[in-house]
Amino acid sequence: MNPRVLFQDVKPVDVVASLDDLHGPATGPLVLPLEVYWGPEPLVDLASTSDVAKAYQAVLREGDTRAQAALLDRELLVRTWPDLLLPNRVRAAWEARFPELTA
Image (cartoon, rainbow, N blue to C red; front, top):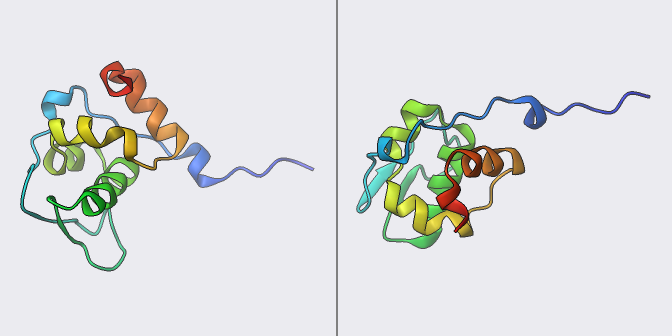
C-alpha cells in the first residue's frame, strides 16, 4: 500500500523576500480577505492577542507574498511568532529565510 499524500504536504509555501516587505497594519481593525480566511468573523482587532494569532496564522498558511506584504506587520510578526500555531512546513520555510524568528 502506498502512503497517503496530503495536500498540506505538497502545497507550496510562499515567503516574502524580506521582513521589510511587510507593511500591514500594526494596530486597529483588519478585515481578512476571503483568499486567506474563509471562516466566520473575518474582522479582527489587532489589539487582541487571539485575533492577531487567528489573522497571522491564516495569512502565513494561505496567503501569497502579496497578501503577506499587505496584511502582516514586521514587528507584530516577530513578537507573535513564538505563539503561532503553524504547520511544520510553513514554520520551517519562514525560519529558514528569517533566522531572527527563532531567537
